[in-house]
Image 1 (tube, rainbow, N blue to C red):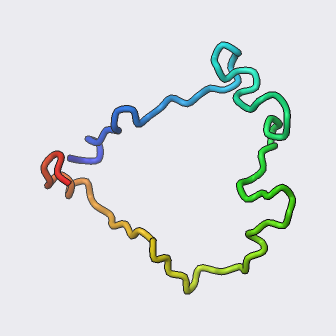
Image 2: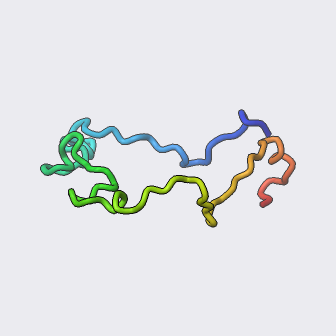
Length: 93
């Protein structure tokens, strides 16, 4: 088994939706944005942290840098070579 032998799982790649290409395409005209309102305009959708203009919660909290913080739920990954995976039988966990 080598890197060039690997193939994606069936159904892993999905064709992208082409929006705004004719009414019959299903996502034409308004391209899934609706008719009017802020979200239908270009550049209209605010960020995930936007709270409607009130002082955001993120800015109320103290600014903490990364030193001294250890996340107990962090997942540590180890690199595995594809040639090492070839040593196992097919379907083995």
